[in-house]
Image (tube, rainbow, N blue to C red; front, side):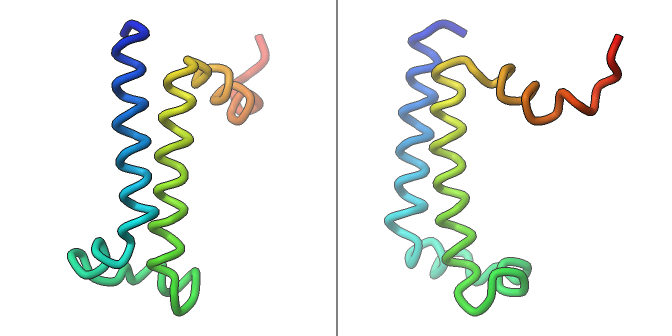
Length: 84
């Protein structure tokens, strides 16, 4: 995928992430509460989960745009691979 394609995916990720951050109330009205988020994050867990998810989507778009996903995954999970 070329630079233009990565940039389009980045813009889409930013827009989706901003929707998750700014329209959390509307998303919860549409989908309802998320039970595991309420269990692990507390009373406002669904709000926290959706906002964290929006931030991660935006971060993922940035990583995809800069084409550093291989470096990021290697730094996180590289120790799990056997050393040859």
